[in-house]
Image (cartoon, rainbow, N blue to C red):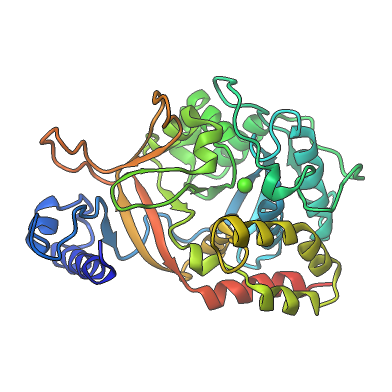
Length: 375
Ligand SMILES: [Ca+2]
Protein backbone atom coordinates (compact mmCIF):
# COMPACT_ATOMS: atom_id res chain seq x y z
CA UNK A 1 0.00 0.00 0.00
CA UNK A 2 1.40 3.38 -0.89
CA UNK A 3 1.59 5.90 1.89
CA UNK A 4 -0.71 8.19 -0.04
CA UNK A 5 -3.44 5.66 -0.56
CA UNK A 6 -3.23 4.58 3.06
CA UNK A 7 -3.60 8.15 4.27
CA UNK A 8 -6.54 8.61 1.96
CA UNK A 9 -8.18 5.52 3.33
CA UNK A 10 -7.58 6.57 6.90
CA UNK A 11 -8.91 10.07 6.30
CA UNK A 12 -11.94 8.63 4.63
CA UNK A 13 -12.57 6.30 7.50
CA UNK A 14 -12.24 9.10 9.99
CA UNK A 15 -14.72 11.16 8.04
CA UNK A 16 -17.00 8.15 7.93
CA UNK A 17 -16.72 7.70 11.65
CA UNK A 18 -17.64 11.32 12.22
CA UNK A 19 -20.56 11.05 9.81
CA UNK A 20 -22.08 8.06 11.54
CA UNK A 21 -21.46 9.48 14.98
CA UNK A 22 -19.09 8.49 17.70
CA UNK A 23 -21.54 5.98 19.08
CA UNK A 24 -21.28 3.78 16.01
CA UNK A 25 -18.06 1.94 16.62
CA UNK A 26 -18.60 -1.07 14.41
CA UNK A 27 -16.24 -1.17 11.46
CA UNK A 28 -17.93 -0.12 8.25
CA UNK A 29 -16.66 -2.48 5.63
CA UNK A 30 -18.70 -0.81 2.93
CA UNK A 31 -17.10 2.53 3.74
CA UNK A 32 -13.70 1.06 3.04
CA UNK A 33 -14.83 -0.36 -0.27
CA UNK A 34 -16.38 2.94 -1.32
CA UNK A 35 -13.12 4.76 -0.79
CA UNK A 36 -10.79 2.27 -2.40
CA UNK A 37 -12.57 -0.02 -4.87
CA UNK A 38 -10.94 -3.40 -4.91
CA UNK A 39 -8.52 -3.68 -7.77
CA UNK A 40 -8.62 0.00 -8.73
CA UNK A 41 -5.35 1.39 -10.04
CA UNK A 42 -3.27 2.58 -7.14
CA UNK A 43 -5.64 1.02 -4.65
CA UNK A 44 -4.49 -0.97 -1.76
CA UNK A 45 -4.47 -4.72 -1.99
CA UNK A 46 -5.29 -4.80 1.69
CA UNK A 47 -7.76 -2.29 3.10
CA UNK A 48 -7.60 -1.48 6.80
CA UNK A 49 -9.38 -3.86 9.11
CA UNK A 50 -9.96 -1.22 11.77
CA UNK A 51 -11.81 2.04 11.83
CA UNK A 52 -10.37 5.26 13.12
CA UNK A 53 -12.07 6.50 16.25
CA UNK A 54 -11.76 10.00 17.67
CA UNK A 55 -10.77 8.77 21.09
CA UNK A 56 -10.28 5.48 22.93
CA UNK A 57 -12.96 4.06 25.19
CA UNK A 58 -10.51 4.09 28.08
CA UNK A 59 -10.32 7.66 29.34
CA UNK A 60 -9.58 9.60 32.49
CA UNK A 61 -7.07 7.23 34.01
CA UNK A 62 -5.87 8.07 37.51
CA UNK A 63 -5.53 4.98 39.72
CA UNK A 64 -3.38 2.21 38.25
CA UNK A 65 -1.79 -1.13 38.98
CA UNK A 66 1.42 -1.59 36.98
CA UNK A 67 1.96 -5.22 35.97
CA UNK A 68 5.49 -5.52 34.62
CA UNK A 69 8.41 -7.81 33.74
CA UNK A 70 11.44 -5.50 34.16
CA UNK A 71 13.15 -5.29 31.66
CA UNK A 72 14.86 -1.99 30.84
CA UNK A 73 11.86 -0.46 29.10
CA UNK A 74 9.57 -1.65 31.89
CA UNK A 75 11.92 0.03 34.34
CA UNK A 76 11.62 3.39 32.59
CA UNK A 77 7.86 2.89 32.24
CA UNK A 78 7.43 2.06 35.91
CA UNK A 79 9.57 5.02 36.93
CA UNK A 80 7.39 7.26 34.77
CA UNK A 81 4.21 5.87 36.31
CA UNK A 82 5.52 6.32 39.84
CA UNK A 83 6.59 9.88 39.01
CA UNK A 84 3.53 11.06 37.09
CA UNK A 85 1.53 13.61 39.08
CA UNK A 86 -1.65 12.51 37.34
CA UNK A 87 -1.34 8.84 38.33
CA UNK A 88 -1.74 7.03 41.61
CA UNK A 89 0.05 3.68 41.57
CA UNK A 90 -1.83 1.44 43.99
CA UNK A 91 0.40 -1.58 43.43
CA UNK A 92 3.11 -3.01 41.27
CA UNK A 93 2.80 -6.65 40.29
CA UNK A 94 5.30 -8.86 38.50
CA UNK A 95 4.29 -10.93 35.49
CA UNK A 96 6.10 -13.52 33.36
CA UNK A 97 8.12 -12.18 30.46
CA UNK A 98 11.50 -10.84 29.56
CA UNK A 99 13.82 -12.91 31.73
CA UNK A 100 12.00 -16.21 31.46
CA UNK A 101 11.00 -18.57 34.25
CA UNK A 102 14.49 -18.73 35.72
CA UNK A 103 14.72 -14.95 35.69
CA UNK A 104 11.41 -14.25 37.43
CA UNK A 105 13.01 -13.59 40.82
CA UNK A 106 15.37 -11.14 39.13
CA UNK A 107 12.38 -9.34 37.63
CA UNK A 108 10.97 -9.01 41.17
CA UNK A 109 14.27 -7.56 42.41
CA UNK A 110 14.40 -5.18 39.45
CA UNK A 111 10.88 -4.00 40.28
CA UNK A 112 11.83 -3.30 43.88
CA UNK A 113 14.89 -1.42 42.62
CA UNK A 114 12.80 0.91 40.45
CA UNK A 115 10.38 1.61 43.31
CA UNK A 116 13.40 2.62 45.38
CA UNK A 117 14.76 4.71 42.50
CA UNK A 118 11.45 6.57 42.51
CA UNK A 119 11.98 7.38 46.18
CA UNK A 120 9.02 5.23 47.16
CA UNK A 121 10.65 2.26 48.85
CA UNK A 122 8.21 0.83 51.37
CA UNK A 123 5.46 3.18 50.17
CA UNK A 124 4.28 1.35 47.05
CA UNK A 125 3.65 -2.36 47.56
CA UNK A 126 5.14 -4.92 45.18
CA UNK A 127 3.52 -8.32 44.68
CA UNK A 128 4.83 -11.53 43.20
CA UNK A 129 2.44 -12.96 40.66
CA UNK A 130 2.29 -15.95 38.38
CA UNK A 131 5.78 -16.70 37.11
CA UNK A 132 4.84 -18.65 33.98
CA UNK A 133 2.15 -18.67 31.28
CA UNK A 134 -1.18 -20.42 31.80
CA UNK A 135 -0.15 -23.54 29.86
CA UNK A 136 3.38 -23.41 31.26
CA UNK A 137 4.98 -23.71 27.86
CA UNK A 138 8.42 -22.24 27.24
CA UNK A 139 8.53 -18.77 25.76
CA UNK A 140 11.26 -16.68 24.13
CA UNK A 141 13.50 -14.94 26.61
CA UNK A 142 14.44 -11.36 25.73
CA UNK A 143 17.80 -11.00 27.44
CA UNK A 144 19.31 -10.10 24.06
CA UNK A 145 17.84 -6.64 24.44
CA UNK A 146 17.51 -6.33 28.23
CA UNK A 147 20.78 -7.94 29.30
CA UNK A 148 21.12 -11.13 31.31
CA UNK A 149 19.78 -9.45 34.47
CA UNK A 150 17.21 -7.32 32.68
CA UNK A 151 18.60 -3.87 33.29
CA UNK A 152 21.59 -3.67 30.97
CA UNK A 153 24.74 -3.60 33.04
CA UNK A 154 22.86 -2.71 36.24
CA UNK A 155 22.70 -5.84 38.36
CA UNK A 156 20.35 -5.78 41.33
CA UNK A 157 21.15 -8.36 44.00
CA UNK A 158 19.30 -7.29 47.12
CA UNK A 159 16.74 -4.67 48.13
CA UNK A 160 15.56 -3.44 51.50
CA UNK A 161 11.89 -3.51 50.55
CA UNK A 162 10.39 -6.98 50.43
CA UNK A 163 7.48 -8.20 48.39
CA UNK A 164 4.11 -8.41 50.09
CA UNK A 165 2.81 -11.75 51.33
CA UNK A 166 -0.37 -11.40 49.28
CA UNK A 167 -0.34 -12.86 45.76
CA UNK A 168 -0.49 -10.39 42.86
CA UNK A 169 -3.78 -11.82 41.56
CA UNK A 170 -5.38 -11.50 45.02
CA UNK A 171 -4.08 -7.94 45.30
CA UNK A 172 -5.41 -7.02 41.85
CA UNK A 173 -8.88 -8.34 42.70
CA UNK A 174 -8.93 -6.70 46.13
CA UNK A 175 -7.80 -3.29 44.88
CA UNK A 176 -10.04 -3.23 41.80
CA UNK A 177 -13.10 -4.50 43.66
CA UNK A 178 -12.51 -1.98 46.41
CA UNK A 179 -12.84 0.92 43.97
CA UNK A 180 -15.32 -0.08 41.26
CA UNK A 181 -14.69 1.64 37.94
CA UNK A 182 -11.58 3.46 39.12
CA UNK A 183 -8.56 1.22 38.65
CA UNK A 184 -6.79 0.55 35.34
CA UNK A 185 -4.13 -2.12 34.87
CA UNK A 186 -1.07 -1.03 32.90
CA UNK A 187 0.01 -4.43 31.58
CA UNK A 188 3.58 -4.21 30.35
CA UNK A 189 4.41 -7.89 29.99
CA UNK A 190 2.76 -11.28 29.65
CA UNK A 191 -0.92 -10.98 30.51
CA UNK A 192 -1.05 -14.00 32.83
CA UNK A 193 -1.83 -12.18 36.08
CA UNK A 194 -4.58 -10.10 34.48
CA UNK A 195 -6.14 -13.08 32.73
CA UNK A 196 -6.17 -15.23 35.86
CA UNK A 197 -7.78 -12.42 37.83
CA UNK A 198 -10.41 -12.19 35.07
CA UNK A 199 -11.05 -15.93 35.04
CA UNK A 200 -11.21 -16.17 38.79
CA UNK A 201 -13.37 -13.21 39.68
CA UNK A 202 -16.26 -11.88 37.62
CA UNK A 203 -16.43 -8.85 39.90
CA UNK A 204 -12.87 -7.98 38.88
CA UNK A 205 -13.96 -7.84 35.24
CA UNK A 206 -17.02 -5.75 36.10
CA UNK A 207 -15.12 -3.36 38.34
CA UNK A 208 -12.00 -2.89 36.22
CA UNK A 209 -11.83 0.49 34.50
CA UNK A 210 -9.75 -1.03 31.71
CA UNK A 211 -6.41 -2.37 30.61
CA UNK A 212 -3.64 -0.70 28.66
CA UNK A 213 -1.41 -3.40 27.25
CA UNK A 214 1.64 -3.55 25.05
CA UNK A 215 0.94 -5.58 21.94
CA UNK A 216 2.74 -5.80 18.66
CA UNK A 217 2.69 -4.40 15.19
CA UNK A 218 -0.36 -3.21 13.33
CA UNK A 219 -0.12 -4.31 9.75
CA UNK A 220 -3.52 -3.16 8.65
CA UNK A 221 -4.81 -6.65 8.12
CA UNK A 222 -3.33 -10.02 8.72
CA UNK A 223 -1.13 -11.14 11.54
CA UNK A 224 1.42 -9.48 13.68
CA UNK A 225 4.08 -10.53 16.14
CA UNK A 226 4.05 -9.10 19.63
CA UNK A 227 6.38 -10.25 22.40
CA UNK A 228 3.86 -10.16 25.23
CA UNK A 229 1.30 -12.24 23.35
CA UNK A 230 4.03 -14.77 22.57
CA UNK A 231 4.79 -15.04 26.30
CA UNK A 232 1.26 -16.19 27.13
CA UNK A 233 -1.09 -16.46 24.15
CA UNK A 234 -3.96 -17.93 26.18
CA UNK A 235 -3.79 -15.12 28.70
CA UNK A 236 -3.76 -12.52 25.94
CA UNK A 237 -6.82 -14.14 24.33
CA UNK A 238 -8.68 -14.10 27.67
CA UNK A 239 -7.97 -10.40 28.05
CA UNK A 240 -8.95 -9.38 24.50
CA UNK A 241 -12.21 -11.35 24.82
CA UNK A 242 -13.02 -9.92 28.25
CA UNK A 243 -15.18 -7.02 27.09
CA UNK A 244 -13.42 -4.48 29.30
CA UNK A 245 -12.14 -1.28 27.67
CA UNK A 246 -8.76 -2.14 26.17
CA UNK A 247 -6.14 0.20 24.81
CA UNK A 248 -3.16 -1.27 23.02
CA UNK A 249 0.10 0.33 22.18
CA UNK A 250 3.18 -1.22 20.70
CA UNK A 251 4.84 -0.98 17.37
CA UNK A 252 2.20 1.20 15.68
CA UNK A 253 3.44 4.48 17.19
CA UNK A 254 7.05 3.23 17.15
CA UNK A 255 8.56 6.44 15.79
CA UNK A 256 6.75 8.42 18.42
CA UNK A 257 8.47 6.47 21.20
CA UNK A 258 12.02 6.63 19.87
CA UNK A 259 14.89 8.13 21.86
CA UNK A 260 17.92 8.89 19.70
CA UNK A 261 21.59 9.50 20.51
CA UNK A 262 21.00 13.19 21.18
CA UNK A 263 18.30 12.29 23.69
CA UNK A 264 20.68 9.91 25.45
CA UNK A 265 23.31 12.67 25.58
CA UNK A 266 20.77 15.13 26.93
CA UNK A 267 19.66 12.65 29.62
CA UNK A 268 23.26 11.86 30.57
CA UNK A 269 23.73 15.57 31.22
CA UNK A 270 21.10 15.52 33.99
CA UNK A 271 23.63 13.86 36.27
CA UNK A 272 20.96 12.27 38.47
CA UNK A 273 20.79 8.75 39.85
CA UNK A 274 17.81 8.20 37.58
CA UNK A 275 19.56 9.45 34.46
CA UNK A 276 22.63 7.35 35.21
CA UNK A 277 20.38 4.33 35.64
CA UNK A 278 18.62 5.04 32.36
CA UNK A 279 21.86 5.27 30.39
CA UNK A 280 23.31 2.12 31.91
CA UNK A 281 20.12 0.11 31.54
CA UNK A 282 19.13 1.27 28.05
CA UNK A 283 22.39 1.50 26.11
CA UNK A 284 22.05 -2.14 25.03
CA UNK A 285 18.45 -1.56 23.92
CA UNK A 286 19.42 1.38 21.75
CA UNK A 287 22.37 -0.35 20.08
CA UNK A 288 20.35 -3.53 19.47
CA UNK A 289 17.41 -1.74 17.93
CA UNK A 290 19.59 0.38 15.70
CA UNK A 291 21.65 -2.58 14.55
CA UNK A 292 18.98 -5.24 14.12
CA UNK A 293 15.67 -3.41 13.80
CA UNK A 294 16.65 -0.46 11.67
CA UNK A 295 15.50 1.98 14.32
CA UNK A 296 17.04 5.41 14.72
CA UNK A 297 17.35 4.89 18.47
CA UNK A 298 15.76 2.98 21.33
CA UNK A 299 12.07 2.14 20.99
CA UNK A 300 10.02 2.56 24.14
CA UNK A 301 6.72 0.76 23.88
CA UNK A 302 6.24 0.19 27.62
CA UNK A 303 6.97 3.83 28.48
CA UNK A 304 4.54 4.88 25.76
CA UNK A 305 1.80 2.82 27.46
CA UNK A 306 2.40 4.73 30.67
CA UNK A 307 2.59 8.07 28.85
CA UNK A 308 -0.80 7.44 27.24
CA UNK A 309 -2.24 6.71 30.69
CA UNK A 310 -0.62 9.71 32.35
CA UNK A 311 -1.71 12.17 29.67
CA UNK A 312 -4.93 11.32 27.89
CA UNK A 313 -4.21 13.90 25.19
CA UNK A 314 -0.85 12.41 24.18
CA UNK A 315 -2.40 9.92 21.77
CA UNK A 316 -3.21 11.54 18.44
CA UNK A 317 -4.78 8.77 16.41
CA UNK A 318 -6.65 5.65 17.41
CA UNK A 319 -8.23 2.78 15.53
CA UNK A 320 -10.81 0.39 16.86
CA UNK A 321 -9.71 -3.08 15.78
CA UNK A 322 -11.13 -6.56 16.05
CA UNK A 323 -8.25 -8.46 17.60
CA UNK A 324 -7.69 -12.12 18.29
CA UNK A 325 -4.68 -14.14 19.32
CA UNK A 326 -3.66 -17.28 17.41
CA UNK A 327 -3.52 -20.19 19.84
CA UNK A 328 -2.91 -23.14 17.56
CA UNK A 329 -0.62 -22.24 14.68
CA UNK A 330 2.47 -24.30 14.08
CA UNK A 331 4.40 -21.16 13.19
CA UNK A 332 2.01 -18.46 14.34
CA UNK A 333 1.05 -19.36 17.91
CA UNK A 334 0.83 -16.13 19.91
CA UNK A 335 0.50 -13.95 16.83
CA UNK A 336 -2.03 -11.14 16.90
CA UNK A 337 -4.71 -11.46 14.22
CA UNK A 338 -6.75 -8.47 13.11
CA UNK A 339 -9.97 -8.13 11.26
CA UNK A 340 -12.56 -10.36 9.77
CA UNK A 341 -12.28 -13.88 8.47
CA UNK A 342 -11.68 -12.67 4.95
CA UNK A 343 -13.30 -15.53 3.04
CA UNK A 344 -16.21 -16.14 5.39
CA UNK A 345 -18.44 -13.41 4.01
CA UNK A 346 -19.20 -12.39 7.58
CA UNK A 347 -19.23 -8.69 8.39
CA UNK A 348 -16.24 -7.16 10.08
CA UNK A 349 -16.73 -7.74 13.80
CA UNK A 350 -16.98 -4.81 16.15
CA UNK A 351 -13.66 -3.68 17.52
CA UNK A 352 -12.65 -5.00 20.93
CA UNK A 353 -9.37 -3.10 21.21
CA UNK A 354 -8.51 0.55 20.68
CA UNK A 355 -5.08 0.78 19.15
CA UNK A 356 -2.95 3.89 19.44
CA UNK A 357 -1.55 4.59 15.98
CA UNK A 358 0.15 7.90 16.59
CA UNK A 359 1.25 9.90 19.61
CA UNK A 360 2.95 13.19 20.32
CA UNK A 361 6.64 12.36 20.12
CA UNK A 362 7.86 15.66 21.52
CA UNK A 363 5.62 15.50 24.57
CA UNK A 364 6.59 11.88 25.09
CA UNK A 365 10.27 12.89 25.14
CA UNK A 366 9.56 15.69 27.57
CA UNK A 367 7.74 13.30 29.91
CA UNK A 368 10.78 11.00 29.86
CA UNK A 369 13.08 13.93 30.54
CA UNK A 370 10.96 15.21 33.44
CA UNK A 371 11.05 11.75 34.99
CA UNK A 372 14.81 11.38 34.72
CA UNK A 373 15.71 14.92 35.81
CA UNK A 374 14.52 14.29 39.35
CA UNK A 375 17.48 13.72 41.62
CA1 LIG B 1 7.64 -5.34 29.34
